[in-house]
Length: 340
Ligand SMILES: Nc1ncnc2c1ncn2[C@@H]1O[C@H](COP(=O)(O)OP(=O)(O)OP(=O)(O)O)[C@@H](O)[C@H]1O
Ligand SMILES: [Mg+2]
Image (cartoon, rainbow, N blue to C red; front, top):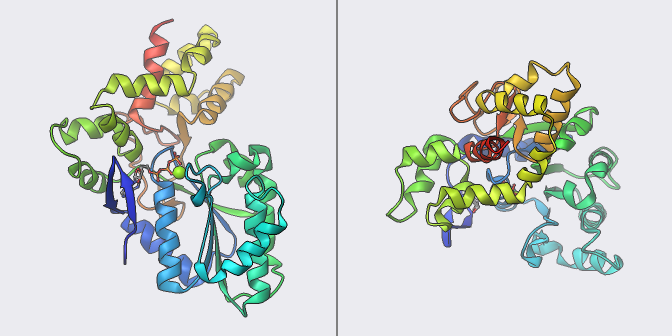
């Protein structure tokens, strides 16, 4: 399978590893997705990279018409990408929306409907990168339903349809999970072998692979940040502390909640064991909303895209039910907790 080119740490590299994910996507491409597939994963674990690889696979190996939206893309040209043969339809729809950028998800859905009307029995894919933040977390459910309607009540027949949404917004998981509108999957940071391949692309001098693995837990974005800050762990930590307003947040916690948080540093499942308490529930919700921990589930073969993480790896902050998104996320919290 052809692999996409990606920008990583100031160089152009090829999409690495994720072998199982690619096999899974291959099956989706062959059969269609039947409903909306929502993929959750930690910040920076490689969701966008995977979605771009999916786009290429669907277009080049399966002849899908692909509509790809990424409302938060830094490069404006990446907000809406599509298979060139539907350009006319896309331009027509974009013109009919006076504020097409702020309504980009609606634009994409309209394009998909119009492709079904104009092209006889198309294979069509709608890929959405981090749309929940853009449309508002409270609208995640309704948009998932709108996407499901596109699958179940299309304006015209299609041959196959693939609808995939990727997100790091754990807050929306519970809301979407309540309905039968979507199939939820989780992806984790990179596997050790894949991550080592990525690490090897970076020039010396650099810390040992063991050390980098221990710090990042296989998160490629954290690796890139470490590299860009000349491997200064302190620089990356203070960035996480700032971006997530950890000082402000932790200073508002009462002493009992801080104790709970301290237990969660050792084992994130400690929170689960206390979920009957209001304080533990609030703490868990806050940790998920701030993208510090992720919800996990059984490591069976169905709920995961690519290989699931181990059942438990407390050194990396991975519990059975919850996991720190990366060891550095946990370390950032530890630093601030120590101040109180
Ligand atoms: N399989 C891979 N092979 C090579 N590089 C990768 C791979 N996955 C991710 N990367 C690189 O790692 C970095 C982070 O990946 P990416 O932006 O896809 O993560 P993300 O999960 O979409 O992050 P965010 O939560 O911020 O949207 C990028 O520089 C990307 O190019
Ligand atoms: Mg992304």
